[in-house]
Length: 174
Image (cartoon, rainbow, N blue to C red):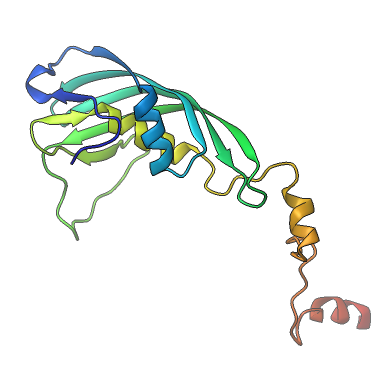
């Protein structure tokens, strides 16, 4: 599988000692990622990642930073988005079989299956970007646009059923 932002690290180059890898997406990679994630643009996407091997697999820890522009989900206005997310992943040769029960503790890392002889740090950064952005961003004019279209807010919503005001009516009788 070819990704828009691929920075493969061969498994045979990853040892027990931590190694820092710094990556940055090019203009064309950022444009392709913006299209993939339905963003207006991505002006910067970088990662500083520490990689090393241990008895569980390949550990990847670090930070993904960047800047993007999203469209407001209501008005389509451009909205700036800043990316500054920690990354902690464990790449393993084989994920557990479906149906296996596992007791998870707070220190368990997200686990990713190794495919082929590499791990793709560019895809790690791209996935982190995708998970960090607001899926339904709203700009400062969104509430007014929704109100003008007749959409009410959650605070204004009143259930339309026979029991809607039952609690209030019961209190009045007491």
